Image (cartoon, rainbow, N blue to C red; front, side, top):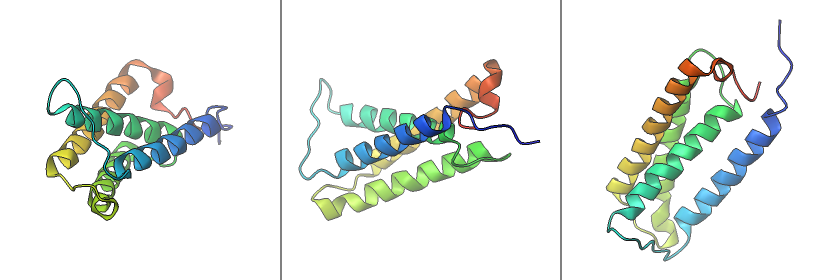
Length: 129
């Protein structure tokens, strides 16, 4: 029998949508340069923001089923490729290392989700169900 939708469904989906818009804006803003204490700080940021994006996407429940995590990872990779390849249209630079950092963030999220599902039974289902 179907379970009623969680009260978290709408807030998580709104958070994911707003985060996606913010990420898309930040990664396509013309001439934006990120400076930090180390030269590769932007790679750490890429990894982190795609980890968060992937976790939010998973929790949104937009993809369900037995292969939910696999589809989440594939969609995360697809979004990363879209994000990086469209940047040159906005006076930005396509960088394979940025794409690798994005992919690493997606894989890190998959690992966090897998670990969380093992220790937190509620997360085995879906916060957005």
